[in-house]
Length: 372
Image (tube, rainbow, N blue to C red; front, top):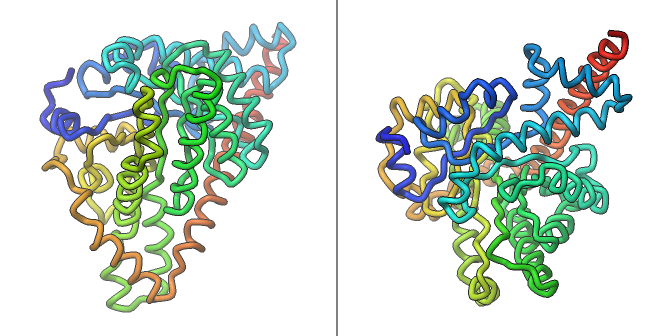
């Protein structure tokens, strides 16, 4: 475990630090193990954009692509093989953390094909295939929190598969996610699954909320609007934590907990600060609360470890203030529902675009490999 003051303070406050990045170079160079040993990393998240970046840089994947090309594998089959291989290796590196924390941490997340975000049945099948191919108990399958994703979340959890629910922006959708989680555990119990082996996190996106709302505040240009800049994302996340506390204190949850279930932890995602005028540790130090995960790009992680001031819980005392921020935005004519719906659409589109770029790049490499 790291002796870094900020990392230790976060862990003591109940925050698990996960790295929002993965690549073959990071895995095989020993860098991932180094981050675990020295910077307090206890989990890893990936997404289509991360894999697209990893496979487009350097030549770490060239030999495998060449072999897959000779075997006549399709583009989709090649991407599936490469990404699941990376996640499997990362799972093995993080297995000691998984064992030491009884499965709470030591997790590596891999996302279903983003083109399936609005197809419930196909999402379920993709999740099962990814889980079987990685074949490690500490893998988490990422499922987008679209309307069609909610029943898929329940069905995948019912199979005993741990799930990372991603692309959550609104409080209403987050409540739907928690309901889907509880439903999945209830179905798993009916099927005789051991609830103590099923884990889940709910990835609530942060910085993108400020980016969109700040742009709308700039358009208004008033003194009141300017005063609200940089406040919406943290307020939104704090109210999400309030919802988490409410749901996981209900009799419905207690009934599941009595049978060994673990709560679905809130995970703060998109925590890299986009606006250079804001502290680069904003979405970490202002969102410290028990039973949470903060998944950070390495740049944010390094900033937190270098100069982050972690002073304990910065969430649970701020619900009234957070509500007032969102109410003030509505009074200015900025629709919360419109913003969060737009962010979800853009989030799915962004991952689809990254996936298409990934497929295009792999197709080119396969063609080279076939000619070699």
